[in-house]
Length: 238
Image (tube, rainbow, N blue to C red):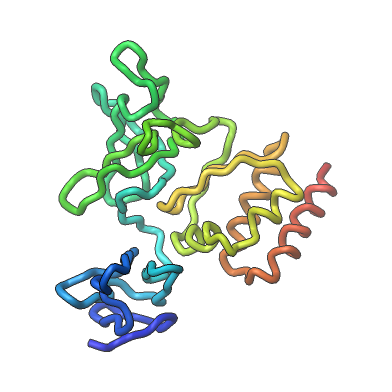
């Protein structure tokens, strides 16, 4: 076993040297790829060790298989209805369940209009290796906010989990740059599924989706050129 530091390439079994979950009153959050055992934090998947302020640690790795984590927002597709429960494909090893009561204002008399094939933006209420994932479409106050059934006119596509973490980083300029050229609606799931609807045409939606996918290997300082190129291509099409 090796002791590792931030930005090191890590392997399962390595130990983080500079962080321990019990640092007095400091709350340390362990993200994907990390596991606590006693007074030690072990790496449980290969990748690069990262830290986000104030004390959030995780392993950044290129992967497409999603492991559900409680509290994360995900995008999924309704695959079947079984009684009062909907089954939703979120790209994990098993499908998530979604009760009709998991929507704002839902009751036996006021059931949500959810059909097989609908795209759902929800929050994981239950996520454990010993239990089936469970979704809700409300926040802690019982309000739906941006959660719920997404517009069927949008486009759903998949990407790597590392790209999701990159574009959701507050320091990533991609969405602000795209907003200067396009009007769009967006739902990004931590499970590597993104729903988007841009502009009045399908071509614009596809162009913005391609810009998001291209951002995975584009440095932040080159993103303005990427967005400008997408805008020029759309201008020629119009």
